Length: 227
Image 1 (cartoon, rainbow, N blue to C red):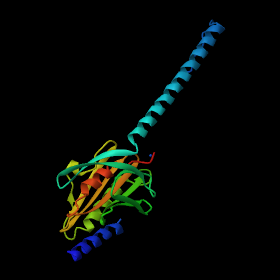
Image 2: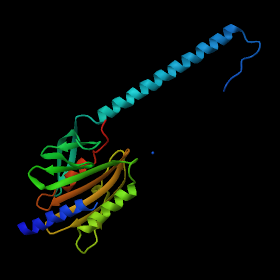
Image 3: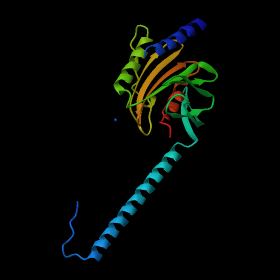
């Protein structure tokens, strides 16, 4: 069993290697009329500016509330539903934050790559890669993910994840896609999606005896650019 899992771990390492009136006054109009018009225009501009400022403050306040310090996350392990409180955690290496459950550690591997480890078994983890849409194309990141999953499939095609509940969901998430390769002892899953101005790539290394893919997925759904 140990040898089999060492093989799976080596396959995990393989994945790391592949990788935008004017208006005219009336001639007969009085000076008082003109003054009243100017004052009225200035008042309108001031009111509009105040409204815009108030709107921006409201939106900022709403964003802050949405990304509060804690968030309840629901996930499944072997069809058993669980709900726990996750804490907002900033990446030290990348421009994102994530709601992290207790019992997991987020560490930086290298620029644009972090690992979210399960503390009780560091062989079970999720690699997190984010990049701005201004710096990369979604199609390139997606294709690289598919090639990486195929590289560890050993003679068989990786399986596309068709069930929506097994793909990242939530406000602001779009263009999500995923593939997985299953082995005797576990599964390697790759996913790519867009969140705001970020392209997010997740690679989950799970063991059948642990089965935390859904927990990693639910945490991955909360990734967003730092505020």
